[in-house]
Length: 284
Image (cartoon, rainbow, N blue to C red; front, side, top):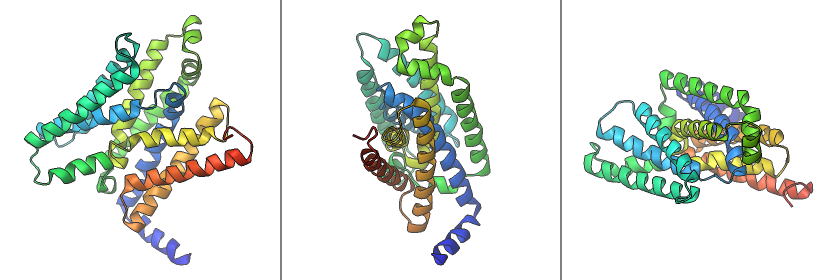
């Protein structure tokens, strides 16, 4: 045990490890807050769809040889989040169909663009790193950490300020509209926040694993609690703990960061499910 703590203290002395932990905590916190809302609204796969869109945005940025692909990726992802919302309200194109259309199309176009225009000689490695995460979380600069911190603070602040409205829209959108709440506006805000979270999480777990950060903590918390506030708080705590464990384990064991974090989330869900059944809660 002493050797483990000695090893950890050695790693924590490096700035890149501290940066990775800070960004991991911030991204996990943000993703877990909106995860409960998406699960309850049965719109969980919007995270998966927008992650594919973010991959397409990164591919476009590489075509234009942009040194910082985040601004363009963020713009593309937010636009597609709005289109997904509008598509979900269209009687001819249901929500799940709209997600499938945009996500698969963006993934295919992105990969096609990378094949045609990629300046890298290791295309397979670049694509795999983007889809499943890479060591880029361990090479963050101070500026990137600051940007992540600013966007995370904005996301958390918006969620706290609009908590009551988000709660109302989540559980009964028709009733919320009848009482004067602009449900479309708050759905749009939720979609934009999710788009921001997706772009932030790309470096952490990769585009194909982002949904795990959104869904697993929420589902785990629902095994133990029933109220919206309790589930949200528990989801945030579980998400942060799993990310910390995943990042530290990945650094020590040399495993992929994204996959290790998701594995920690899966273990947490299994434990919460068993505990929920044992306590006679919602896990029955």
